[in-house]
Amino acid sequence: MTRTLVLVRHGQSEWNLKNLFTGWKDPDLTDKGIEEARIAGHRLKEYGLHFGTAFTSELYRAQRTLSILLEELGQPHIPTVRDAALNERDYGDLSGLNKDDARAKWGEEQVLLWRRSYDIAPPGGESLKDTGARVWPFYIHRILPKVLSGDNVVVAAHGNSLRALVMALEGMSPADIVAEEISTGIPIVYRLNADSTVAEKTVLSH
Ligand SMILES: O=C(O)[C@H](O)COP(=O)(O)O
Image 1: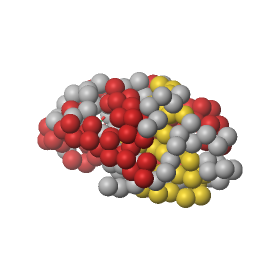
Image 2 (image 1 turned 30 degrees about the vertical axis):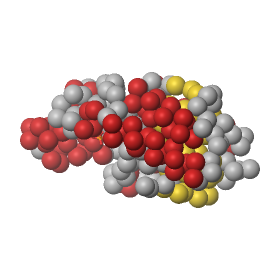
Image 3 (image 1 turned 45 degrees about the vertical axis):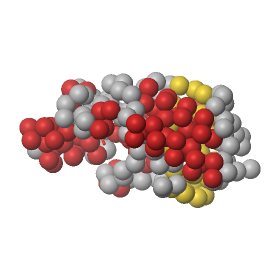
């Protein structure tokens, strides 16, 4: 049994391109983002992966990335679960603001704490810990049983919902997770042991 779990962050969005905090806002992919999703599907095809189930968020950029990727894989119609538990971190009052303008207003250090620390939430939004509080139970109750049953699973989600998932999978500490970045459109392939620990991790870079 392969017990494969693939995580992929959506391709570049219009707001990634404009350097805006996005969170639960719902912009589309850019042309580059569409291409990144295609390449991700192509890399998974080359890797020989077939999926039984897909999971994504309720946000369009992740859903569109997933459908482009599955189309490229030749598996456009697999069962797909969409759930807000996998949504991006809610960026609260920062949503829609330019990231450089935010650094100019609140300082580099404060903005980095909001973006990468474990438990400091942006004003009106979620910390990574808050995001994990919805991602982790969803993983345990909905995603993991599929993986452990041998049903290869792909999860198309977001930078911070995936950072929360990677933190749990790899047993990272709050200090470790600060440096963890998830690139757009790069599949991360985990093979899990029967006890759900990670046996192997492969990053399918371009
Ligand atoms: O919501 C956003 O702005 C991005 O998708 C992730 O942003 P971050 O890299 O600032 O956490």
